[in-house]
Image (cartoon, rainbow, N blue to C red; front, top):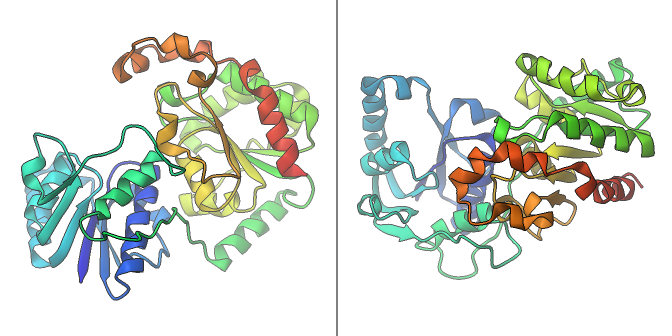
Length: 353
């Protein structure tokens, strides 16, 4: 048996879709599993024993119709038992269409239902302990596994060498052997997914007033300006606790550093998903734009998260997702630290204890 799983987009999405691969390997141990993913997400897939081959969807396929057509034709060379499309957009519709398989499984949309032999209707509201991001993906296995479906969770696989290198790097900077390390996801993937700098600085000040910790900022070199904006807003006491110039040179390096931290706090997104996949406790601040049920569930007992709807649901009124996105600045302004700061400090105290 041979399966093709399609999942492009962001790191969190790709990492979460590895649960499909793991479930396939559990129910069909002798099967071969291929996963289509974007090139920039490959580091979270490295070393995963449930994926036999990563089929890379290169950036050039979006820039050239000829290159895209060549890639689509290449899918015809392999005969699959089933294709599972977890992405459900035009690119993955085309891949599903071109791939050779008896079963083609995807999420139901009236205008693309004809592409698939089996359509699954996604849940909009969680009815169990799993976040929707996991439960909806596992539903794609319904046409293949009818009873006792295996439930799995995303996992990142680091080598002993990578973790040792992270420990060495921390030691060279005088970190990791004294105050506990806390990774801070200070920036979201977009402005409408990023907690305001003034509020983030207030939270960091509150943390450093209560706990003796070392804060590592999660950012890349071209985000240094935004990182420094938050740093400059912090009190001198807090600034002394921030290793502002210490960051990983690669995504694998970041994950290895994250594995050495006691926890991660900050904006919900890829870094939070990676921390969960490394079994590192997280405290996530959800964007008003994101559905909390989509990415957090009761199964994550080590983790905590907050959403503006938890405190001020009336602010959302009858707004749809697009309207929430347009009004994100106003909503974030109402998302002040006093709403959840005490809960964050209790979380820190418990985890550090």
